[in-house]
Length: 412
Image (cartoon, rainbow, N blue to C red; front, side, top):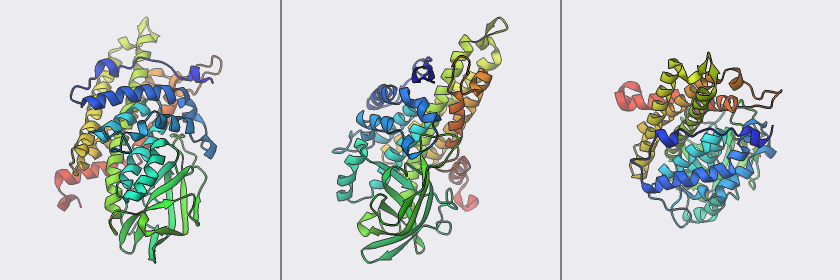
């Protein structure tokens, strides 16, 4: 299937149904800039990224470095390294939405490189930041963020965490295993959550040059195939003390500050996926003839699409509000972050399912072999589900909201 055939051009209903009324002018500019860059470097290869089976060689370096060359990896950072935006988190999430519109898995790669890791590196020394940030921003090196383990994901309690860092002279010795780690098979560095005694630490570990590090082969997943994940195994890996991110024993706080931002980003990705699905659905409703008229003449689908458009509007506003709170220095954006993640990703799954129903068998097929026709809904369907699961399952997000609403003394 050719790249040209794979990219079906449909109207972007967002351009006439939703408006950046309350957003800073810089964010409106970031969206326009990001959209042009994503159309140029991601859209032409997005169907390949979404369909090829995972391997080290399949990592989408062309799209990855294309985004970096476009300057989008610099959006999260202050000067002198980055763009120095007044609202960097809002800008970064806006970029995430634009990427997800064409490739949800590429948005996952961007989330790791430009949301999770930058927040982790904000706790690094000035020397480390000066050495590593230019490589991250230029796309010269890929980075990973590693908290999840075989038996620790949503539960990051000390008792659940099995990757251990013993204190030794000059640093730590790390043993354990991390799982589902984005970019790990190509990453040079990883921010890794470990247990030290009864406390946790976040360590920056050199994956390429540290004896005892082994990165597994890429996981084979239903979707998000461009977002390569794999186990990282640590066998007596020495980490210098200067690679400690944040204060000793404060690893969980560092990790949660990263994940709060990551959840907003995933909420934005959900909005991008949902928007793509709505646009495809509207195109089909306008062009598919059924029972003597367009499919869109059926009131059921009119009402359903109106409902989905309203939900996308709400989901977009949620992630923007959560990101803006962080940019304004409010450290307690956790409720909005949880809402944005749970709501935006649920809307993505629901909207893709509706769009597939509208397309029928054509939406279910990867390709019509006789004619070569293809629509990307089967890819969107495979990709959307993971958004409800990673970076804190949606059930966990509901619990976060409930704790704020009802009180931790009751909810636990």
